[in-house]
Length: 367
Ligand code: SF4
Image (cartoon, rainbow, N blue to C red; front, side, top):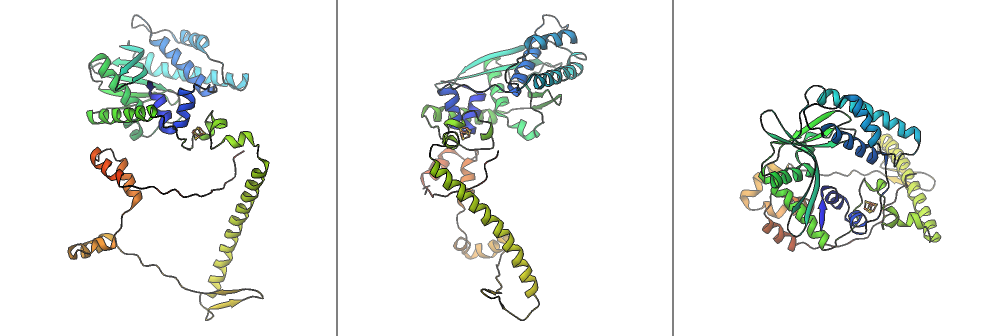
């Protein structure tokens, strides 16, 4: 089995998507973002692939863009042209900040690796490995996303952790930093990795490998589903593409319309209830009548306590446990906590029992 950062990331987002893409090898659609990203990666490989520390002139960089440009995935010539011009501007900005001023030859470029793990191979391509002025090594990967992520995301980025680990295994030294260069905002974000993080990375990668080998491919819905190429084959979406059973579609439509009305009515009745309550506030009457209905005014109260202060009083009396109960959600979060020993996690998991309940949720399908 071969796993890469992308496939691991796909598995963690949705195991079924991983299966469609890497096990069944179903084709994926070309998109402007993919073609644009690949084109810029190729041009940057050209820029740094020189024998002496004389970088190519910017005109040569533009020529390389022309040569490496991938046309697949764009919806029209106009859209493609827009991306192409944008690519030129992105490269010009990058050139000005990094090449024109302070060009240095990288230690490695587009380095393909395949690490022997526990029964599988972990593969990847390191875009660039630099040796900084103080002799320290830096792993750099290019990104073409528009927005910069928060620093804490960079600090736990799985791809950077894998590349840190790969650098140690391939070249035998520890990179001082690992960075993502965001080409569109023209900014590099760097981070470091320690032994504990690498240990956790190995655990994450091994966990995915184990689940893949056990063929655990349950679909997981997420905000990424609208962009998934495999919707026609996914149980969450396949009906949208087949619509063979008209009767059930009609029922779904009716159910949705009723739910919409229910929401609207709830909203209206809430406003009227507020008006009635406001009217009743200073009045003697406790019950109001219309021709067919009556409304009773009642006061509901809910008492809350300060947990910490109550615990201080009840704990010494040995009564605290009588008023507290286990919070399953918090326990599940604790089980996700990598710091908890595996042995303890295992013991806790064995005590869990899962009861499946059946519920329907209804919302409008986005057009
Ligand atoms: S549509 Fe969503 S749930 Fe279905 S395979 Fe794709 S990512 Fe997974």
